[in-house]
Length: 192
Image 1 (cartoon, rainbow, N blue to C red):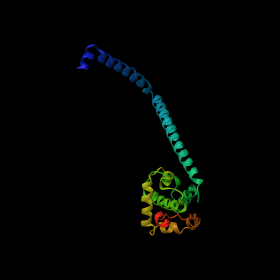
Image 2: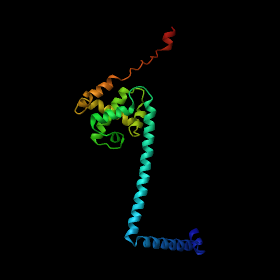
Image 3: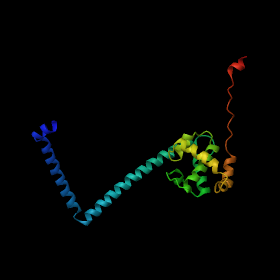
Image 4: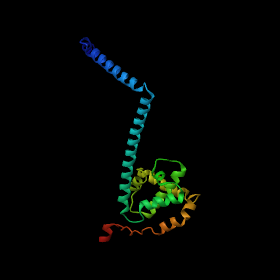
């Protein structure tokens, strides 16, 4: 009912007429711009440049965030996280960006399982959420699943070859030994 009353006063029709006139003016400008092949090519170059600049900015921002996260974790005990990632990349042949990236193919995920194993063993001070943040902002349950999957298939190929590599053996040999956790007994039994 309200729309009919407003339309009786011409509000809706007037707005529609203005919108159509504006669309006609914009369409004329676009048509004039696209009449020449140079105009079309220039527009495509401008759009491509803008998209490339925005994508580069997003990649740079994410890379800065990941580097800051890795640098924060480097200060802790054990071999640096970056060193573990480079070692896994060298041993497996999977580049570090693919270890950190979203790909789920076996040639990327299995090396990531090795990286998770090395981080859990060599860096016991890191939590699974911290390891997940290092490995491309993955959830901690993904890290736990990778740990479990590695435990299942570690005796097979190529894991046995990767684990036998002298660099991996050397890294596993230098893992920090943590002090044993204190055991909390029954305080009532100790008091008696």
